[in-house]
Length: 240
Length: 240
DNA sequence: CGCAGAATTGATACATCTCAAGCTGGGTGG
DNA sequence: CCACCCAGCTTGAGATGTATCAATTCTGCG
Image (cartoon, rainbow over all chains, first blue to last red; front, side):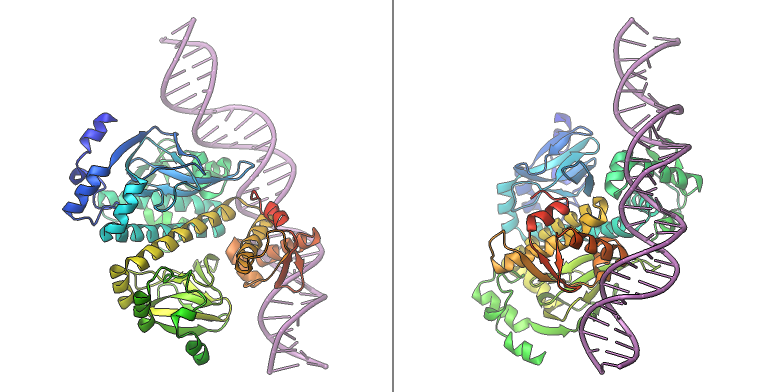
C-alpha cells in the first residue's frame, strides 16, 4: 500500500487522471488537489462505511471495485451503486453515508478530507462542473438500472449486467466492436443477486442457461467470455 | 395559460421560489433568470418530450406532476422519475432526453432555453451549487426507489409509494406528525404500476388489500386517506 | 342516459423464491 | 502428498407471488 501511494503520488501519472472528478483541472488546480489527497487501501470484502456512519472524506476509486447497498431490517439487501475506477465516493455537503460501502475487490481510493474538498468545489468551477456532470451520469445509470430491476426477466437481468461490464471492458481496450470480449466478474453470485434483485440460485441458473445457449462461455465461475456482444445485448432486451 | 403566465411572471411571487434551482439566487441573479424565463403549460396525459428527441429547453415544474419513463421495444415501460413542483427537468450539457417525459396532471413549467441557461450555470455558482444539490438528492431518491423495485413485495411497493406521497403532502401543510393525511393520487393505476414495476391488476389488488386492513381509506380510486402514517410506513417495510 | 376509459375482481399459468442436497477448487494441517 | 474443510457455486423439487387472460363494475362526462 505504501508502495502504491508512492507510485501514484503524482496526479500526472494517475490512471484515472482524465475521467475522475479532477479530469478538467488545469495544472495549478491539480496542484491544489495533489497537496490535499491521500490514499486508502482496502481488501476485497472489507467494509468501508456502514450506512449512517460519519464519513469524514470523499474520494475517487483509483483501482478495484466498490459497491453501495441498502439493507432492510429483515436482511434483504439491494445494491444501489457499483463504483468502478474513476467513480466518485461520498457526497459533498453531507457528513454521513445513507449506504453501506463495501470493497468488492482489493481497492485503492484517492481521498480528500470533506471540509477542504468542499471549499475547493466552491472555488473551482472545473471541479464543480465535473462533479455535476458525473452526478448526472450516475443518475442516468441509476435510471437504466431501475428499468432492469422493474421490468426485465431474470435472464435479461443477468445478460444486462454482463453486457454493462463487457462494454466497460471493451472500451478500456479500444478493441473493434466484433471481437470476443473476456472479463473477470468483479462480483460474487450473491453480489450479482444483490445488484439485480434476485436470489443467488436464480443467478446461477440463468448463468448456466446463457452458457448452454452459447451466449457466454465460462472458463471458471468468475471468468466470462462473450463471443458476440450483439447476441448478449439482444438477450438483455436492449436494442443493439 | 396566458393568465397563469401573467400571474406568475414575478419570481418573487413564485410558489417554488425557495425550493427550485433558483432557490439560492440573490436579487440580481434572480433578475437574470426573470428575463430569460418563459412558461409552458401542458394538459394531463400530454407528451412533453419523446425519448431521443431534441429538447431545446430546461426548466422547473411549477405546478402539477410530470414523469420520466423508459420503454422497451416490446412495450414494457418503467417510470424512472416522478417530477413534483420545484423539480428540475432536462439536463444541462445534453440536447436530447433519454426518457419520455409526460404530464401526469395539468402542468406548468418555468422554462429556460438551454444555451443561455448553461451560460448562466457556468457564471452563477448559486445556480450551479443548487443544481448539484438537487441532482444529488434525485440520485438518493433513485437509489431508494431501486430498493423498492428490487427487494420489496407488491404490498410493500404500494405502501411505499403512498407513504412517499403522503410525506410530501404532510410536509407541505406543516401538520403535526400524528394527524391523518388526505391526498389525491397524481397517478392512474397504470402509472402506479409503471412506477413500481407491477401490473395494473396487482396494483388494484394490493390497494384493496391495504384498504381492507384499514391502513388506507379510499374515498374514490384517487382520493386516499392515511389514518396512521406509522402503520403505512411499517407496511412499506421501512423503519419508522 | 349511455358510453368509454378506468378500476376491480376472478381463475389460471408461470417465473422466481425457498429449502435442501451436492459439487468444486483452493488452502491447510497432519 | 493426501485428506479434509470451507466458501462459493450449482442443481433439484416444490411452494408461492405476481402476471396473464377474461369478465364485470365503477365513474365521469357528453
